[in-house]
Length: 510
Ligand SMILES: Cc1cc2nc3c(=O)[nH]c(=O)nc-3n(C[C@H](O)[C@H](O)[C@H](O)COP(=O)(O)OP(=O)(O)OC[C@H]3O[C@@H](n4cnc5c(N)ncnc54)[C@H](O)[C@@H]3O)c2cc1C
Image (tube, rainbow, N blue to C red; front, side, top):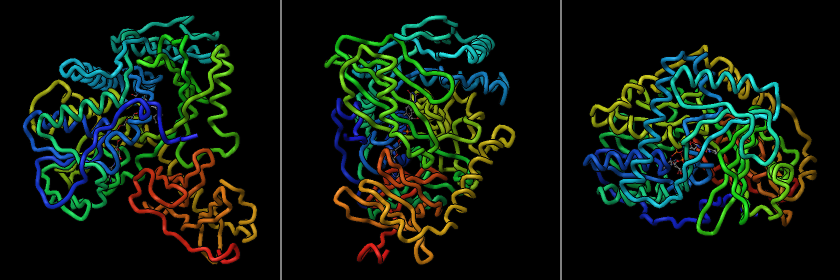
């Protein structure tokens, strides 16, 4: 089972771009080639700025390649929470930014004739439990206050009984990579440049010099579109953002297409929709969100999702074709950070923290950053204050802040435990364990041949102790969400350096 290859990756052809070399200069360096980076770069290049995208791996290889790709302003039950936390006016700004983002996606598809399976559909939040019906009603009241179209429904098109649903019509979904790859072509036609395999490890924020592949790129403006920012100072982003992982599966369903896009109330989260393409219909089913590094290594999550499929869609007899997972950044107050990285770095910008609602939010971010840099007027700029990374909202944030702080304390306390050396024998094939030996905290993994590999068990980002993720066989950071494969290489940041490797002469030498 290849767990890192999504249905989107399987059904699209990635464009090829060279790796960055040499010493060059540009107006804007965009670091990160996901939806945020490519959309922002496209808008800037269309305005005539020399724009260069630097992508660590392949364009679209981050969260964008593993999303559910519901394009909707219905972000679960956020609006009632926002109205309570930041007031009606600010919540209206959030809705406005996302509506404009939605329109930008539609406009780019139309103007450039992008074939990306774009389909209009209704987005639903549903519940199986009567006790949650009031949450749906409160969301409806929030939408009414904001004058957004929505309705409550006793039934929807799900093939199992529900207690109720909250619906937002005229939403959409698409194939995120077909869309993104087509945008790279639009960007290229506007003389924008894209470089892949160009992992930026350092940026001189004052002089605007980006160091990459042994060369330099001098930029008047720098945009961090890397999802979790690898530059987390100034601004203390490492205590203001965490990452949530979530899991998805795809099953080919030739005779069945689920109408509508769905997410439930409460835990565990279940998300589902169908996707139709030239090969037929596919059911996308997933959820089971958890903070990265906080997975419970009990029953593998993919087995739980397959059980949900059997219970909710018993008529689907086809086995699951693909399993994958990914993560997204979440801020303390659950509002994105879009704008200047900090007051001390006026030419460095950031866009992140979409809380798993990045289709419309990334388009809104692209518009805000493009107009900020060109200082042009646009209705989206009325909303920019809401997303300012300079904000710090202890009220809204206190719970999460304590949560993040508690993680660090909990994990560091854990490292103080003495684990008997003999525990290494208990590590089964395909499993990893953090053990303590000679004053070191060591991440030990036993592969399917029985061979051991060992690394310093501290994340190379900010030295948080790692945990082993049994479902995905990776070392995950519970503090900021960096992930490393069993060879110690970075799977996703903010860490940019691999784990320090220890050599094992024999098991007793560890
Ligand atoms: C399971 C799941 C389902 C989701 N479903 C939905 C949905 O249905 N609807 C919705 O609206 N949103 C959804 N989201 C959220 C949405 O997918 C993301 O918010 C969005 O894709 C983020 O795009 P991005 O460009 O900001 O980040 P990414 O796609 O992660 O792109 C960041 C890029 O930066 C690159 N990079 C990182 N560090 C460096 C570096 N140092 N140098 C160079 N490049 C670097 C990475 O390789 C990556 O390609 C979902 C998220 C998850 C986790």
